[in-house]
Image 1 (cartoon, each protein chain N blue to C red):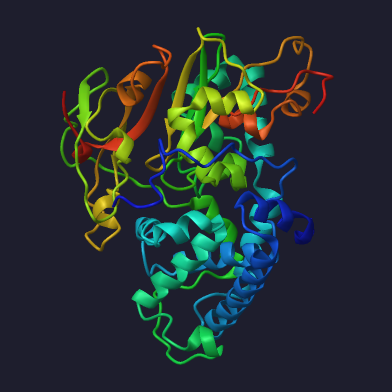
Image 2 (spheres, helix red, strand yellow):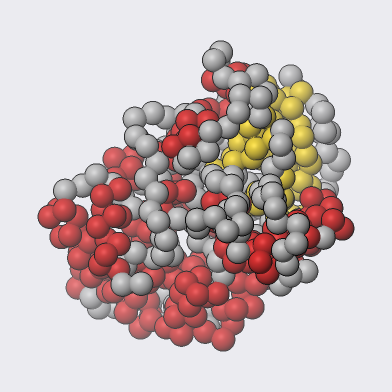
Length: 218
Length: 218
C-alpha cells in the first residue's frame, strides 16, 4: 500500500501536470508534518490517537462490514425486515456503530427500483459500514452528475439501467447515511452468509454497481 | 452559502474516474491530515457543521482544484487560525508561538470508544412536526451567505415528504455558534423532471434530507 504508485492516479484525476503536482505535494507533505509536530507540542493531539485513527480506518472499518450486513439480509428474512425498518439498530446488532453511521437508512434494490447514493455538498458516506469513501465518490464529476445525469454515470460504470427501472438517487444532505441493499444474484440459494458476503462489492452498496455473480470475475 | 462545494447539476467535470482496488489513503500525508482533522474535531473547538462551512467557503478555484484531503487540511488550518489555536508564523517557522488551551484531548486508548459512539444528531422534539409523509412541499428559494445544507439545485422546487427522521441538530445555526436549535428533518423526494426538465425518465427522482425551515407547503 505504498503511496507512490497511487500518487500518479490521484494527480491525474485532478488534471494537473506532474511536475507541478509533485512540488505541490511535497509542500503539502511538509506542512502536514509541521502541523502535526506543532499540535503535539501544544498538547492538542496525542500521537497515539492519530495512529489509532489511521489504523481503525485503514484496516478495521471498511466495506467488509457492509457486506456482512447485506449477506445477512439476503439470508435471513427477519433481519432484512429489521434492516429496512430500523437500519441503525439492525446494523448495530452486528457491532457496526458510530461515526458517520449514527443514523442509518437502508434502501433496497429490486427488479423495479435501483438506488444510488451521493453527497453533492461534501463527502457524506456511511463510514461504519463502508469505511472511508473512494476518491471518485468525493470528486466533482460524481457529485455534480449523480443528480442530473445518474443514468449516464451508471452507464459509465457498466450498468445500463432499463428505461422501466425506477431510479432513486439519495443526496446525503443531513446526518442520515444510506446503505444500498443490492439484489441477490441468481444461483446463490445454497450459499452461506460468508460466501454471499464475498459477492457484495463496495460499489454495489453505493448503488454504483451490482453484486458479483457467483463464480464470476471479481 | 452558494460555494464551490454545492456541485449538484454542474457540468464540465468529465467522466467519473475510478481506480481499481483503491486504498483508503494515497500518501502518508493524507493519513496524517485525516487523523489530525478528526483529532482536532474531538477537542470540541468547533462543530462538524463549522468544519463543513470552513471547507465550502474555501475560494472556489482552490476548492475545485484540490484533492479532498487537501481541502480538509486547508479547512483545518482556517478553523484553527480563526480560533487562535494556530497563529501567524507557527506553520512557517515550525515552532510554537502561542498556547491557547482546548477543552478536551482525544487519547489513543479512547479512540475506539469515541469512534464507536460517534456524534448522534437526533434530539427530543420540542414541538410537533409540521409535515407528514405524503405532504407536498416546496424547497424555499433561499440564498444565505452562511452555512446551509439545502443544495441550490433543489431551491424553489416541489417534492413530497417520504420519511420523517425526527428532530436533528440544525446545521445552519450550529455551524456559526448559534447552537443546535434542533428541527424536524424529512426525506423529500423530487421528481427528476421537476428538477431538470423534460427528457428524464418519468419515474426517476432525487431524494434529499431537508430540515423543516427549508420547506414550505406546496
